[in-house]
Length: 505
Image (cartoon, rainbow, N blue to C red):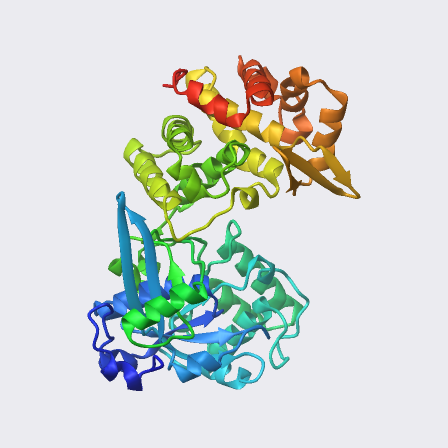
């Protein structure tokens, strides 16, 4: 039995709540560019939850704006799909299966552009959401009179121009536009591109005034791992338990965050935010960006070399290893949390840190450490160096766990084989690919400097880090000591003695 609106009456299991038929009569309030799993696992999850609580009371029109994929499954299943939430919350196992009923219909931009433009005439439609990948928010000299325009900003501008004409430029007809693409200031960047494109298309000044003053482009930050479709064995097991098949079934972790920059007026339009603490509408979302960048991403980066060189392949397996788990926990909670270069309360830091540790333990997410080392050098500079500098500014002592992370980075970047423009390190008898723009540079360093001088050679390079990290009191010496130990004893042997060296505030 395929999941569909007609077959809902035949689902008799308590494993999943069947949507109330009244949900299908709710008006369309959201236009969403993108049909991908991140959107279905996060924004669409929040909207569905709010609808079921009687808060938002609006459905979503999906616009499939690329040629990839197939919208047939959405049609066959009336937009319904199952979201299987799996993971760890507050240290305990968490499982929940939800039939999402938030999607009204799916329109193809290529073949149904006229229907997309018809949505602009709907007075209840107030919100536009997008996730067209980071490449989607770029200026392309697009003609918005094409059917459809080529780029996402072109399509968005064409839709807004249709909206402007449909409601004769009334201020009340403006939209709240929330991109979720993973770039900083995504809302403001999209707004500037759309305005520039309006000028390039020679659109009238009255429309540009409406575009700038009646519409609200909001920066936003999304954070949830949504792997998407499970493997065939797990999917079959889930479908057997639920009693139906679902071509659109996806999985996600428990943790969810959608931070949206906006005022009370925007919060009122985005009323679905009241349904879940994972949606935050605030005037400044930089705190959430900093917490994620430092505690989640920064910890991942600093621990990637440590765990990989210890012979551990995934984040979950690292959390199953007592010594590595303790290293990760201490690094995150005692050094990074203490030195985030942004105002945050201790409670905010520790709550986010605890949620990160839960996420690392998720048995359903197989996050490879080797994947995390891709562009290792730039990640260290962007995610870690600001925290290191702030740690010294606050405490002026060596952060032992960060020093170990830097030593592991330098040792990981030791290439022992070169094939063309590819560089390979060696762990025991196995080669691993170093995917980093600085691979050739670090290869040269290791070729021309003895191991006992590598810390100073790398840390003094202002081109690599933006400043001389060896000038930090005692840091180069601590990093070098750990490099020596890694080279002599191996990474796993270095972590355990570290537990007795906690000179951490």
